[in-house]
Amino acid sequence: MELLKENWIFAEVDLNKVNPITYQLITKMNQISNLPVTVVLIEGASESLEDDIKEYGPDKIITIKNDQLSQGNDLEMTNALDTLIEKTGRPNSFVFAATVVGRSLAPRLQARLRTGLTADCLDLHFEDDDTLVQTKPSYGDNIMCEIVVPNHRPQMATVRSNVFEAKKFNNPMTKVINITNLKVISDQQLTIASKALPQKSAKSINEASRIVAIGRGDKTEENLINAKRLADKMHAVIGVTRPLTDLEEFDINDQIGQSGQSVSPEILVNLGISGAVQYTAGISNAKTIVSANTDKDAPIFKYSDYYFVGNAEEFSKALEKALQ
Amino acid sequence: MKIVVGIKQVPETTNVKINEKTKNIDRRGISGVINQYDRHALEAAFEIKAKTGAEVIVMTMGPDDFVVSLQEALALGADSAVLLSDRAFAGADTLATGYVLSEAIQKIGDVDLVILGQQSVDADTGQMGPIVAEFLGISQVTYASKIDVDNESLHIKRYLETVEQDITAKLPVLLTVTDQANEPKYVNVVEIAKSFEKPVTTWHASDLNLDDDRVGQAGSPSVVRSISSPEAVVKDNHKLAENPQDAADELVKILKEKNILVEDK
Image (cartoon, rainbow over all chains, first blue to last red; front, side, top):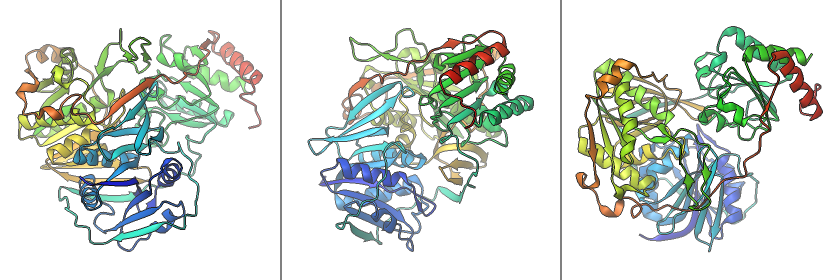
């Protein structure tokens, strides 16, 4: 298999918009790569998202224009990228965003190319020009691993959002290569309809500096009202554990944890949350953690600066009063 | 319909440390449980089984004591279980593991639907589903948040960051499911008793049609060069007063002293 001395980035496009993580990846790759940095963009025939990507100054943009693929599924996308790589040769590395899109497509391509892929990297650097050293967390961020793929190419990785900063960079050398006739093997098994999710106007929990989080133990309406009153008093945003997303008013954007959001507030108050791994994986960057739970052995207490053993609702009311 | 659910046994806690001598993760004294996302995968299969009468086969790869998790899956409602266990499988990365799983699924034969959890809580890769789908040569829908079944197709809701997808998938297909997909049920005592009569099969490397170069460490392109524990932030674990109001007053006093909760924010 012919090798291509380039490092590649997959441009994530969500409904005709480039996901900003793509720009973060370009800036990082430009900083660490001695080889040319190439962005692979798959877009509709009438789109020109390469103009947006150019502002971040990669050396090359390969644009596959194809209406069928712009909303394609993982198998079709894998077919397309595989066909492209057959033409160009295997790049030295190929990085994706660690989003739902990237974490679905990258491993499928990994299996097609039979190479190594490291998921959800927090850092990347090169050794001896070629070797991509990938730093990845395991065990809910309790362990960090350094992973390399010595004998296979491309070295693949998905990279977590917002770890690297995107900076615009004027690169007069950026070359755009348009591919309009890539042969695509389509997949008739899936029919996919996509629509944009309504943008929430409220402040998101990712950015909140104060959060009151409520768990399953606090699911009754009265407890909810209490928690909201405390949140108002504290000028805090409400976060929830997974079971509360069953309620109409909360969704994955309000959910803290591995399958929801990672938060980094100045203060986090946990009401009736026991502290399952899936939850605590999302709170490791919270500065001060306060927890109230009836179970004196609740795992959440280990993660807490201050804890109260007892009824979370009573504690919530008392705290509200203490803040008068 | 024949459904295979792939599960993983993971440490009960992710609060693990590195053994200074061996430089490996110290799992001593930590018991194993079914990966939480895999409970949702099992529940998704049971819900489809309830509607269609599908057969549900649960599968895992690991040492012989992982049979505990298979037994639990049988008690939850799976019809039979397969354990893939062989010293040759040790040291496998996601690619080599996915290869063995896909060969085992092919050996079962005529599988219409493969369901996995979105990721494991220990390794966190989420790669197994797409790798197995690719090696089986079937379509995939990952991170399914809602699954309905009718006749020969599935209706799935899937969320990207800013996009909602409605997907109709014809069988065969592989799904990975999020913890939004359903509410896993608990084991009941009657089912535990019945589960011991359900078949558990162990397949070793020699039972599968495997290419030796693609198995275990030899078949793994990824090399873990080093592992480390990031400096854990030390938490005070300060227990507040027993009376709620005393506790709240105590907390507010401390927070104000530390300049954490200043009112005018």
